[in-house]
Image 1 (tube, rainbow, N blue to C red):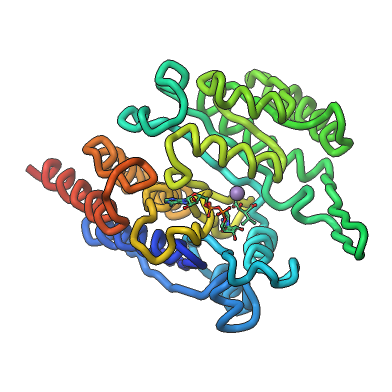
Image 2 (image 1 turned 120 degrees about the horizontal axis):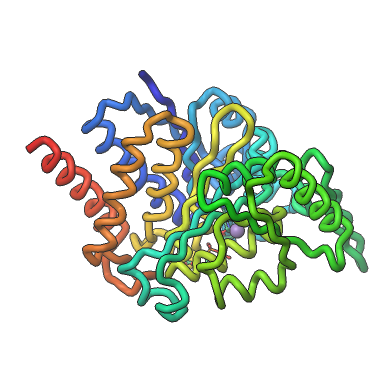
Amino acid sequence: MSRHIVVLGGDGIGPEVTASAVEVLRALDAQRQLGLSFEAHAFGGAAIDAHGDPFPVQVLAACRAADAILLGAVGGPKWANVPTAIRPEAGLLRLRSELGLYANIRPLQVHPALVDASPLKRERIDGVDLVVVRELTGGIYFGERTRSDTRATDECAYTVAEVERVVRTAARLARSRCGKLTSVDKANVLETSRLWRDVVTRVVRDEFPDVQLEHLLVDAMAMYLVSRPRDFDVIVTENLFGDVLTDECAAVSGSLGLMPSASLGDSGPGVYEPIHGSAPDIAGQGLANPYGTIQSAAMMLRQSLGAPEAAVALEAAVHAAIRDGIRTRDLGGSATTADATAAVIARLMAAQAAYAA
Ligand code: NAD
Ligand code: IPM
Ligand code: MN
């Protein structure tokens, strides 16, 4: 079986963390004969520099032909003054939109060995295990924008169909976990949120009567995520709220560098990327935490590449490296990106050797 992965390193620490994940995937492939192949393309700011476009058509064609896409991050000060429509970030939005990746799955688990790295107290976060399903191809990210000298607007729109499909993804996920779904909106102010709430209520009532649903307003949710994060199982929310709340989730886990994600549609390749950005402040120094990207690669093995056992092995190796105190600077340690990568690979090898013995 062959499995073809397009790698879009992007900008800043993006190429560093994807290189780490590819190294780990190659080690896993050597161990398990997964038939992995890799094809790298410039994306984001790097593609603006090389081709004048953050997401060139040939990169889109390569993505469509792939089994999965591994992405680092895009953007940085170099492209800060580029017009909005052709910024590195616009390339990322086009990638999500062109591939129909409407559901962005962002899991949060607090590793027992990292409780001290979290700004929250142990009694609040021991055992936190939740997943945010962020709507990814609608809302204010994709509405009309206008700008004059004195005024700017960003339109926020959602259709019933857009809400239905993402809530189905979230409700199916809730059903496979603890059966609890929290929908987050701003229905006390926004019309899009009122529509969102109506659709979520109907879909869950008619199609997922076994799923326990609650609605929360986004401002309160921002508070509950730090005051009682253990109470949540699956959270579904619109694009912008999901963006903001998941950086908050990452802080709960101990670092933005830890959180993985999968962006999925109804068919075709998924995009797997850490939730963090290009971190220009630490780029090129070997300081980036690669665990979020490596965990994204594990999600890729499970969800797009049909290799769930390899995913479990990879997750266990990351878990063991963290347990053994291999921490990058964001986690209070002194391990480099290369050290953390080598630590994960060493634990993959050790587990294999133990299994064979
Ligand atoms: P950021 O996520 O890049 O960085 C925020 C802070 O977290 C920084 O201090 C950074 O050093 C730290 N950090 C992030 N990832 C880390 C990692 N793996 N290891 C260690 N520390 C890490 O957010 P920002 O600084 O607001 O944005 C920088 C650029 O990244 C912007 O251009 C933004 O648009 C872009 N961005 C891209 C993506 C993406 O491509 N998916 C996501 C978020 C931000
Ligand atoms: C993310 C990022 C992106 C987003 C930006 C870079 C467009 O912050 O993936 O979380 O807002 O979706
Ligand atoms: Mn974000």
